[in-house]
Amino acid sequence: MSNELKLICVDLPAPPLFDKAAPDGTRTGYEPSAAELVAGVLGKTIRWVVTSWSDMVPALQEGRGDGIWCGQGITPTRAELVDFTRPYAIFDESVLVLADSGIGSESDLAGKRVGAIAGSTNLALAETFPDVTTVPFDGATDDVLGDMVQALRNGEVDAVVDDDVALVPLGEQADLSVAFTVATRNRWGVSVAKGNDALRTDLDAALNKVVADGSLEVEWKRWMSDLPFPLTADE
Image (cartoon, rainbow, N blue to C red; front, side, top):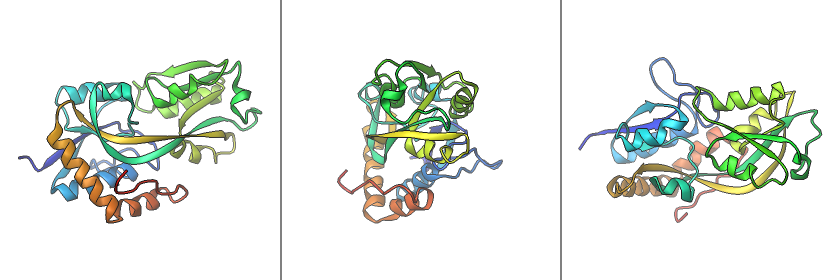
């Protein structure tokens, strides 16, 4: 059995979740730190397999990696394509706007253009807002979040939906503001190829251990001290 765990993700700046890899390939942020904890329990080293958002599931299905650890919400649609572990994170979703937009609630979005990553839980939430035009971003570039924020600044969209952990830091910039947050409690998990029950079971056991012993909470508070740790051993 290989002592290497090949994990698929994108290489882009999305702090505090992750940042662009250093020249030596090392990655920083909550997600890489959590993955290192789990790999340590399993006695494995991590090799990151870099791809685009839209290529992550094909890369997994083609065997280019063992799993996807890259901000994936656990949804019924995705669960038709991959098998998920228990969650390693739970987040709400926020709406980012220009600071002078006057948008502060869902009703203020009527008649507006709202951007989100194509196929994401964020786009699904945007589609529930009444009388909005949703604008999917395909995630094929190196920095889809940056693309959406630039589109917001350029006036191509009036608002952007993403997970609160990604948007709260952006909302602190002078020209941007978090209009409101929806308590969707999206559960994020590691995905493995359909039927790879052995790896999924090992990952679940390791995640349960790092939640129970408090080490995952330490990393959560290290990277996201403004968000309460949401996980329990039986989650």
